[in-house]
Image (tube, rainbow, N blue to C red):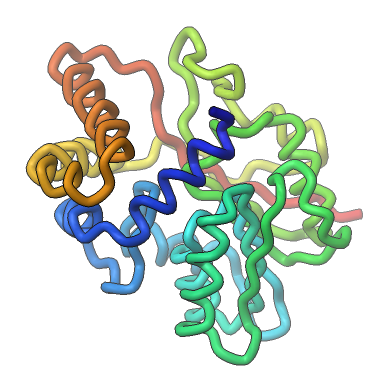
Length: 256
């Protein structure tokens, strides 16, 4: 199974799962009912993202690896900016498009199926790019180059992502994103460990275990993948074997 297939099958499963929704609600505070992410976000983080991107009517924000679109739609609703969501999983784009039809009438938001490293969108088409919990699954140098191409001079990039604390668990996982992005013309504005992330992640894992029977009944094999991740994460927490940390990364595209 390819990475695309794996994510696509997971999105198809969780999009209709009431048990998954309940697990999210137990661990991610302040989110509206319509926003059910496949990432670790909360209302405070989304407010920070929205304020940082400095968007208004007439601007465009690109949400790379957008999943089912909730985070990008949140930003678009609050700023009036146009939204383009990009994800390589067709099931995610289908769900995001349906959400946009309900939340962003008039064509304010659109979603496309494409690789984050090769979106085929026009150069310098965006005032901001956001990427939530996905950089660690993408070739960092390639995606940094694409983000630099997409942003207007002075545009803002914001991401949350895991970085390795030792031996990389994935070939795409890196120890520090800053030099990679600075190499293609970004200036780092903020780079820090994301406060509260581990607490939220463990709460989600506990909630998944609490809803294990319902998850298995609703989504079968996909539930087993989620529950295995939860068990592994909880066991590592008990033994204090931390292998990654989650960072908040904000950078500015250098002026031409």
